[in-house]
Structures are given as structure tokens and as C-alpha cells.
Length: 158
Image (cartoon, rainbow, N blue to C red; front, side, top):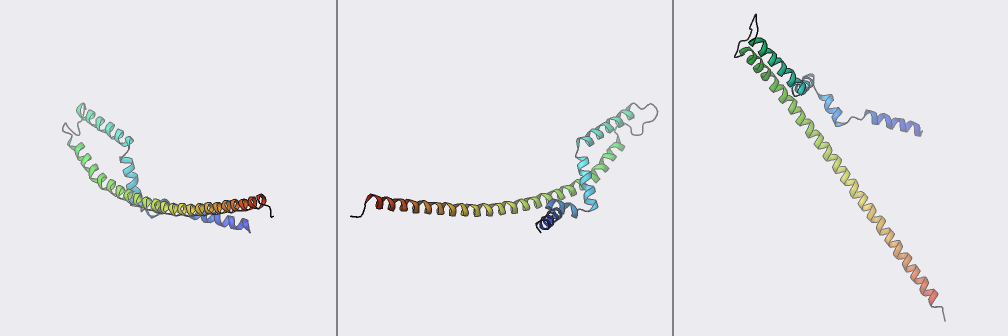
């Protein structure tokens, strides 16, 4: 019977979801895409790739022997950057809003955990105090018993 109970407890532990798992289960496809886009745009890999692309764009347009598709003020390049910023900013803001929500949920869970830990510590303190009082009572009882035994042994009846 113990084995069955242990297996049942293991199944319960495996199916128990943390707040993090529950949060990810509620994310929509758009939310997941926004988080991945924000993660990609906010990386050094993206910054380096974009820098190389811009430098290549400018060099090819400045020294292009046959065709200059975007001449010196690079108006087309500016248009591409504006379009990228117009789409990237709201996506990043959506991701940040979800991050704020996730942080708030984590803070609430941390608060609950801390509250439970505080209650357990207070219960342990009370238990330790009662154990200490019981030990002191036993010590006093032993001392009184020892004192009464020594009085009886030192003063024999006349």
C-alpha cells in the first residue's frame, strides 16, 4: 500500500504546475512571437547584423559602379529604419508589459512563500520555547529532588 501512495504522490508532484508554467500556458501565439521578436531585437547579434547591413548598404551606394539604388542622403535606408522602428516599438512594449505582469506574479508568489516561511519559523520558535521551558522544569525538578535527597542524607533521623 505504501508503494501505491508514493506513486500517487509522485504523479501529483509531476502534474503540479509552477506559476511560471501556468503563465506560459496562458500566452497567446502573438505574445510568444512578440517576446521572441523583442528578444531578437534586443541582442548584440541583431545590432551587429544591422550595423554590417547598413555599412554594406552605404558602401555599395557610394562606390557602386553600375547602379546607385539609394543615393547619398540614403532616403530609402531612412524609410526602412522608420518602418522597422514603427513595428518594433509596439512589439517591444507588448513584451515589456508581459514581463511586468510576470514580475508581478513572481513577486506575489515570493510574498506568499515568505509569509508561509515566517509562519513556520514562528511555530518553530514557539516549539523551541516550549521545549526549553520543559527542560528547565525538569532541571529544577531534578535539583529540588537532589536537594531533598541531600537534606535527608545529611540529617539522619534522631
